[in-house]
Image 1 (cartoon, rainbow, N blue to C red):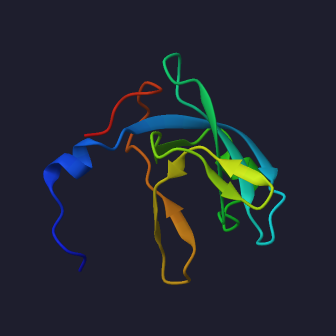
Image 2 (cartoon, rainbow, N blue to C red):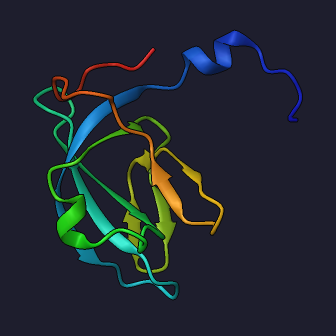
Length: 111
């Protein structure tokens, strides 16, 4: 377990629900996708790059995901990742996205 964090550290994170609107192969050394996520009017669309290859591109299209939208940009090879889509590893080490149980409004804040 990691050391206990101050609650203000969690409050500083901006977690939002977005919808995947585009999935492409990323130009990185590892097999990753370049995923465009729509967070609605206030935030707009942002890109996430990650090793989500256990999902097909077609399966991901239109899925709602939960992401941290205020971590800044991370350089991943020639790609830039603007948001961190949250997930957990399964027994194979594949990333399984955290998603709302039912459809919700784009950009809604997660608390």
